[in-house]
Amino acid sequence: MPREGVVDADVLEQLPRSLQQLSKFERFHLHTPEKFQVPARDPGFDPSYFPQNCGALQLPCYWIERRHLQVFGAQANDCGELGLFSGEGPNGSVLFPIHPSSLAHYQDSLRKLAATDAARDGLRIWGVPTSSTRTLLAWPDRMPERALFVKTSLHSPIFGDRHLPVGKVARSVGLSSLVQRCRHELPGGLDFFAESSGAVVRQLPDLGFIARSIPQSIKTNQLAVAPLFALMGGRRSQPLFLTLMEQTGLKPLDFVEEILCSRFARVWLDMSLKQGLILEAHGQDLMLAMRPDLSQIDRFYYRDFEGLQVDWELRSRCGLLLPTDLPNSRAWHETYATWGYRYGQLVWYKLRISLLQYLHFVLLELEQMLRAWQERGLLGGARIDEDALTAMFSRKMMDLIHEQFAIRVAPDYNILRNLSRFVLLLLNVRKEVIGCRGTAFVAGNR
Image (cartoon, rainbow, N blue to C red; front, side):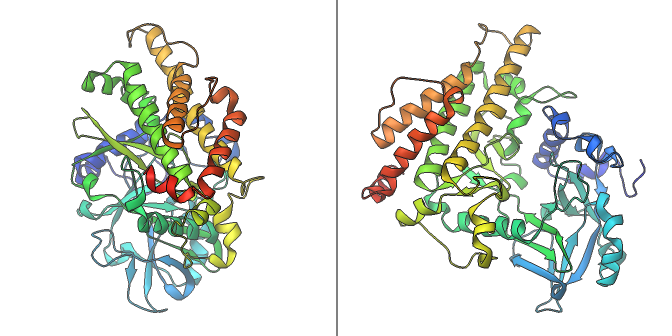
């Protein structure tokens, strides 16, 4: 391979079994990666950095003085992770990871900042790309217990704009802190990968990074986790859905109904209409947590706070936590109120996009794979009808709306095929929640 520092699979064996397994899901269970990996955007990009082509590599990390950075959040001294902070005050330093494909572009700037290559002081950091390529699982050599994820700025446009400017870094750290502070109010079927810190170079405002913690239950092999896309993907390995059918003994539609429809519908409604926290609900950011032998689903995990949306009015009217100390709050609208897209600040748009991501990129694509597996003889049972999974999810959502908000939805319809109609219904439910009975709804239905 043309890049330096690439090593064989032996380095990955330093990791606990759960993280080795997650790394395989991230790299070898990608679903339709050609939709996101578009070489025409950057013909010069080295495809050996794609996760499916890449093993562990030595991750370039530089000590940069804090005075040259905008730093958000902090790393606790006892967090048991890769130490990113050294010293105090403006002369203290931050360990700043650079994606190896971007190193040549930023090399001169790093030299002007008097940045120090951590490897020269003997600190060797291994990294292995996740499904997003720019986010890497990283750990110091022979210290896998200190592993975390680092989301880096990717200079190449091959995946679109994947820089990390001030607003995105501050948003991720700020919304992560909000969730951590109100987590006792959140649904029990959902947990998070916290993003406690990040930094941006002052002279290069598009060059930032975000640190993402790994829950101890995963590091210590108590739980195995996999992104939802792994249910469908697996050109080199058996798709996770087929493995789960073997391990759990469930029938395919029973699994879909119980886990992906009933459980997730409850989580989504609780988060969106009771907490005002709207998930980016596609197969990369949503994860399944399971027993190590994959015999039972424990809960959902959510990662990447850059995509989390907030219904600030609902939170305000329902008396929920509204921190005044979030980072970069001087640019509140750009940082926390919108994605930056047209209509991105509007609640109906946030609800619509979240549902569309889950209905189309999870349920509809899984349904297509189920039928394909049936045709190939990999999956038994009666043929799955068109729109069967999205119709099942729709029924669960409507039943829950009636159960939790005393609003009956009739007639029954498929949300995916009538998404605007359903979002209008949600906005009517939201009016009830934020009205004079709002507090009662939140407290009584938690």
